[in-house]
Length: 204
Image (cartoon, rainbow, N blue to C red; front, side, top):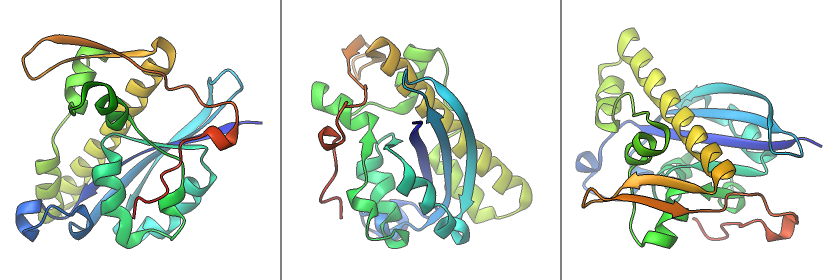
């Protein structure tokens, strides 16, 4: 039986400075990009597709999340999940969320950026930044919204590729705040028994 995984990234309509709060739930979601895929018993991708959902399309997105064995993001437990809270069904908080940054933070006790990992692990870098994504949404013209979608989908691909690297090599590389190269041992393998899957019981 195929194993379903979902990778996702959220872009918002506002910045924290706009709302005078550090609560992502008040930022409003402009776009969510999702890469849905099926894996075989060897955890090899059988098929997958990228789908992006604008704010008004978000209700159509939840079916993908509800089917997934693992929902994968980067800094998602602290940002993307709470940003989606106003849009989410009640089941969302209890789904099998897997946050790559959270896994790293457990070992290093501090966070690290997606770009820092991508540059050292994959020799790739982000195509843009979240600040520009808010500006693209605010401009609202066809070209700006196309840039927003392209950026969000590119971040999802980076998240997927970083995850797959760690799944295969059981490590990730990045330079820390002192510019020292770090190699962190990680185990992203799926638990054999469903009850062993890490469930976030109180995200909301």
